[in-house]
Image (cartoon, rainbow, N blue to C red):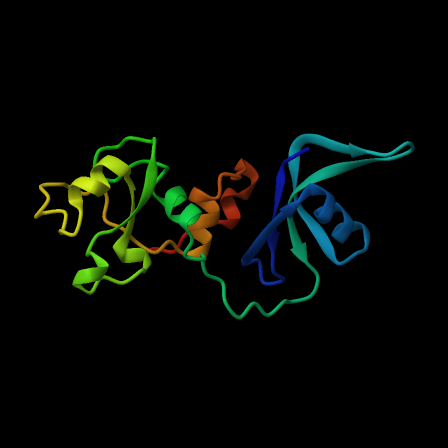
Length: 168
């Protein structure tokens, strides 16, 4: 039972993902309510059967001061689908600064991409244009909802209505 459950705040905004066990406990203790059950799945005790949660909503509003995606190596790999952004290879991956740090490039979402060691070595201390490399996609900072929806690797169909991304 390695399924995950989407946790909504009282205002229906997504705030996190938790385990089925934690979601069931929050429901059982009446700290949350079941919004969407997991299709066809049940949790069973000796005498009772409960629908397995896919989406729950907290009964009290929780103030979440920062809802962002942490800038980590793994999150950049996830954003880039574990593929080199220059050649598409998925082995020997590392991070690359599009604008090298020696030329003033920062370690921020918009300047970091996944690269294989071969392309990273070829690019060296140059810009992609100088190294005759082409970026497959422009690096960007994913929103929290977008990250949950597209890059977390735990997306469930039942989450779709709650993870809509607003048009920019």
